[in-house]
Length: 200
Image 1 (cartoon, rainbow, N blue to C red):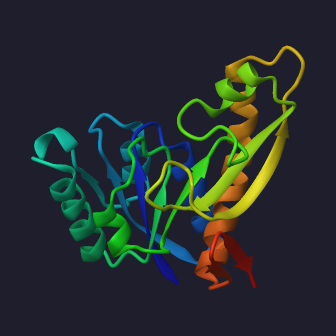
Image 2 (cartoon, rainbow, N blue to C red; image 1 turned 90 degrees about the vertical axis):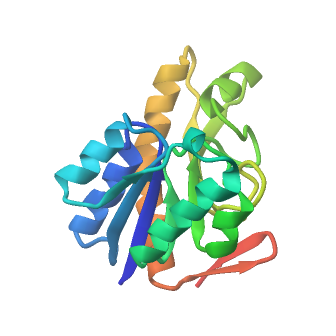
């Protein structure tokens, strides 16, 4: 069984999906710690309801990004975290965290990468006139949504879709695909080979 550390910035719906999958025994893991960069993030309340330890580190309270991430890494190590999951964590991860958890940090993105990286993936898909959008779970590297892809799931763009409607359908798939990716990691079935992730 592995220990998971989840980094959030907002409501934490993917965090909830992870917690639910763990509690159902679908993922052999324990959510050991939830960290937020925003003290008002509702995801912290979700964690507390499940008696999961939480921590808040506000970037403005640190002199630089390295110091900020060093405190996050310290907290993760203290809680024996094996896998870091970014779940609506709205910050680019730097080398301090990535060096400590190389090949052990994953993220979920509401688009079929490499299309539409960064924030507002659904809006970008609609503005571009895409017929299909979707969800990507990927390992995190130094870029913005550029790491090796673990799993993807397509979501059709419907006639008359709004950003909110498309985002809602994408979110439903996020809640399914993220626990699947975590389960594969926990079972030791993922291997990174260059840009590709082999599932064994």
